[in-house]
Each structure stands twice: as C-alpha cells, then as structure tokens.
Length: 71
Image (cartoon, rainbow, N blue to C red; front, side):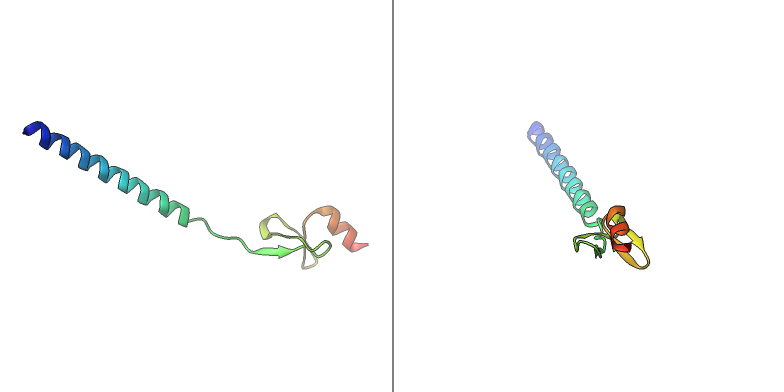
C-alpha cells in the first residue's frame, strides 16, 4: 500500500513539473513583439523597420536601392 502511495506522489510531482514548464514556455513565446514594417521607396518590397536603410525620411531595402533612388 505504501508503494502505491509513493508511486502516486511521484506521478503527481512529475505532472506538476511538466505543467509549470509548459506555462513558462508559453509565456516566453508571448514575449516576442512584432516590429513595424516599412516599404522600400524604390522597389516596394516590405521589410522590418530595423533592417531597412533610411535616407531623407525614406526607407529602402538596401544601399543599392537608396543610391538608385537618389539618381
């Protein structure tokens, strides 16, 4: 009888550990924030603002497109 209670207690502890681990993982996934998207003034492709090249208030997908837009 005591072995059965020990097995049940171990199973409950494992269940609680797995459940808490899943909650932590889902909370970390929610922490990811979206970044604003901008449009390249030369070709029109959309890209994250952090990856764009900015010149005179315009956004570009590369330095080549920035230089081509200036000409």
